[in-house]
Image (tube, rainbow, N blue to C red; front, top):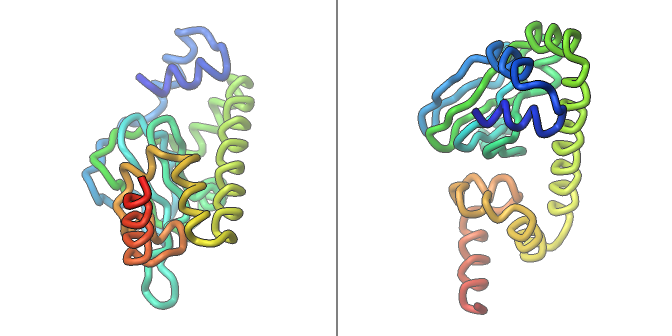
Length: 190
């Protein structure tokens, strides 16, 4: 199980302790395009991606989906604010591929962190990584479009290969047509 290896990598906890922690998670298989959380629905789970790809998005006032985050293998995803407050989500979460994910509820996670303080360190590292990715996205969105695409492709090549063009364009603040044009130009210069 990837989750066990990931926790152990950052905490050094004993195999038996990690196994007991992982037993508190629920394994979920999500179909391609399946919605795991809808905007306005109570956010009950924090998801760890074992296999597959998720996206976090909202629908703007024009009815256009705005993607703000992706999660591939070994990444975590939730509406963190809603998860922590046990409230309704401001975002939706969708599986972009058939995915195997591990879900945990807030109350269970809090109990595990009290029992195993090393998990606090683990989640601090997870939040740091997510925060760094969010800062990178903010920077990318403020650059000329061709430069922002090149930076994103260099930083996260696995995302560029796996994310559908329409959704990647939404994340980068482009139209799908503009992203197609950028890719065509880039291919010509290779």
